[in-house]
Image: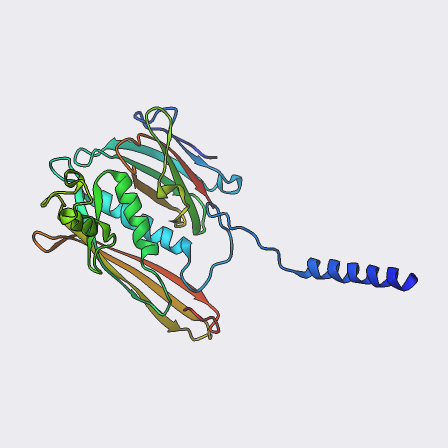
Length: 111
Length: 204
């Protein structure tokens, strides 16, 4: 059972999604935090989850960023990035938006 | 007549068999390539190294200019210290593109460790004494912008023979971002990519 608990600052157009059904029962997305870095002006995103199984998993994630009007912003982050997830442990993904226009996101986790 | 038909049918059969045996060329889906890993470096490794380097740079705050303006970045020497024939631009270009998109940095092509990447900035200034050109359209002296920062580094390869006959290849992507004014490295990053495979594999 995947519990997607969105933080108060996350809105409907942004989300985190586990795309592979076979791992939906294995990992839990527990917290999604978003802030704007006062120095850089860039949006920062942190997703904290937990591997509830007794096995190490090598997952992947990708992020698609959008501007305030919903237009996609090109970024190298749309490529899959490895995400090591240790057994019975929490994991976190910390990402900085590719530029100041990028405010909304769609983060996909896959095996 | 029968012979002609037989020969024609045989030829068609042979052609059909041959075309069936030929390996079909497929275009790689660069966005979701699930092809087997190779012992050498491929585009997936460069994507990963570049992505991690850019994320680390943006998170470090090293590119946040107090005035909110952009830093001018020069590309210094990126050494290929592997056994492979790599054009280090495979890594550097991805980093440059992403940094430019960030709005934090603009890269100069007029200065680099290997000479100007685009010689035209200098060559176009040689038109100053050419009467054929409207001198008002020729760039004036002192208009080019010198770099604030420099990106340098190396890609290193280390081969390790395993006890079971397998081979382990480690690739180190090491990068430094130096403030030219002080010579101090404001950011440094290292991404390690390791591969383990047959000892018969050649990683160059």
